[in-house]
Image (tube, rainbow, N blue to C red; front, top):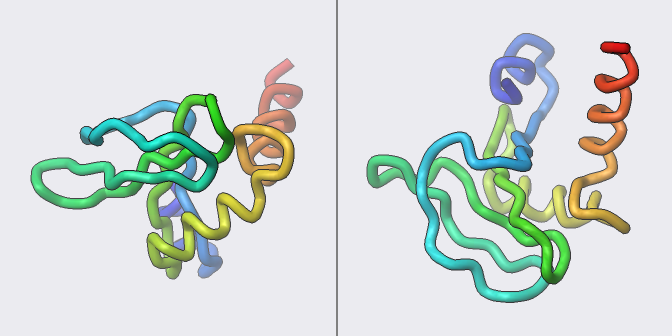
Length: 100
């Protein structure tokens, strides 16, 4: 979705998911900022990333006009207090309230 939205709007985008949609990854090291590649059929499709200590990993992928290292850095920069980046938390909250 991030890639599609980025292409349509021309805006750089990043994919962030709470659950793994595809691929496999090895065990993550401990601690904020730790990441391992998310692999599918021998290709890196993203990363499993820890945004906080002792939480489940997030799954980060490039969307449009953003490199994977930049996507990781951006997600970590936007993860202030919670597991999810603030941008994702706000969008999730708005979507939940819009469906009521």
